Length: 167
Image (cartoon, rainbow, N blue to C red; front, side, top):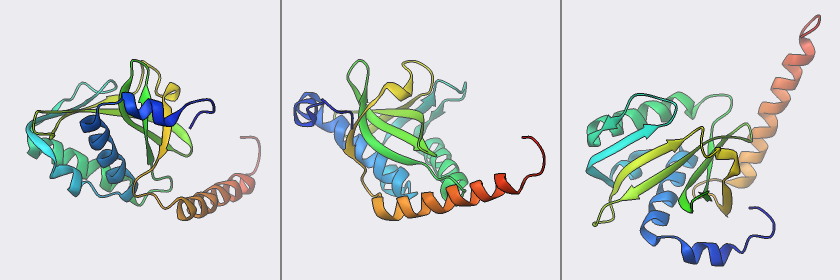
């Protein structure tokens, strides 16, 4: 969380239903398990990002897309992790980092029943790196993550050191 930010005041300004959806998104990313999230999708849900022309529509397509995304990164060298946050314009969502670099900001919308009606991935504008984290990382074991991250960094460092010649 950025210094100088009054977390409580910021939280009070956020829509509680959107905040609940953001926490569920973060839990799904941090646990590499989209199933609890899928249970909260509205019938006509849409998933889209600024970096893709593809729009997934409906529970079936969005569920399949989420399962595919999560399976692809679950056992990778650098799994993503998410923090609940806000981005310019006051949109609530999650900051998704990989290798400590902000990759995207997912912002959900909800319908009148509190089900997730859309997930929009911000990858370009506003720049996801400008998002403010709220310090909430549902489902993320901070100590375990840091230990695993250090192992990955050390493996990468050893690999780079083993290279002959200029890089």
